[in-house]
Length: 499
Image (cartoon, rainbow, N blue to C red; front, side, top):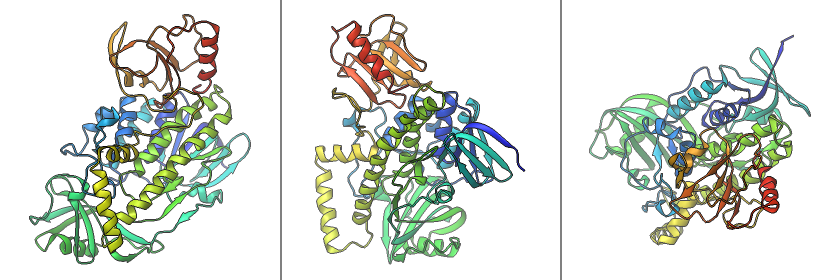
């Protein structure tokens, strides 16, 4: 009989979603164990695009600067929608990070794991989950020679989630219709048609013969090669690996015989399947990232959607585990993130049609119209906000227009001197920001809520704001003249939302 050890939270999966969650939990003092079935990290570029909103969240934890040092050099260029030739402009969204950042996924994972372990998380690799025994008080996990009891388990184990399958949960959606290949390769020789620097997605896309392809330079002889054929059906049930021969054929069909393959570092197949769990919570088990939703890799959404799931869930799960909030707070994770996932699935489905490498006459006409629309500033701003995550607003209670919106990284001045607003969240606390002396002196704050009195160089649209650890406003007031018991009660009531 195996001995059952205990921990507060088990995270299954050590990808960007799972490691982000592990860091958020350990930052809050939650005992966290990460179980990863792979014995070692795969050094692959897959999912290596950080969107502006994710960059803001990483910046708020002090994680962005070290990631930028690992980024692939590129000129600043906007994001894209369906690889249409109009860059998306995020500058109207008042952000310090208006451009996507290209960082190989393994570099993101490495940094997140370093920080999570330094904060106290344990990561066990080569440990595949094989059994779950959930009850009203927690979950017993069986995995390769050990049994662990946890208060909660979070499945971050990808589109083929073992946890989801063990619980027998359906994964409804649209099955894949086409298949493509993603490979990290090294080129022995290059033809003039091979791009020499990262550019806008539309400039990297190529079509030749029956193939569509994108070759993204990563420095030296390293490239990320994505390709497929319009007539290639989804054969995802075929588990055969990608061969060097099929990579070579695609490479030379699109880029000419002067481009030759040197080596394949890693490769995988993906499809355009679109699926989403109906509920992100099943008792003591929660789902995040690809374990909760999958979609075609269009617009650089997948990694960012999963990491933002974790930023939303982390502080809530910590509060529930530590008894600072009722378990019902976890229901707000599904209520807030499921619609976001559904929206991403919706617009990636639209992109799948618009990005068809061999479009019908009708689709070609639709592409032309979309290109014209994206050249209009208001339309571009709308789509840029959607794709970057900057326009996201959670449906929170409260009548103030800022409620549910992200707070911009404004410049503040405190008694200690000038600071950026984002630096207030380095410890993962909520922040009660008093910009006009509105908050009464002596207000008793619960743990992990910081009162900051400051002035702001720009108008944030409120005299005082209560900001969650994930940077979203959950309460605000314009009135700098109201004091006393009424305001104190209002603030205290809203503190329960972040504690």
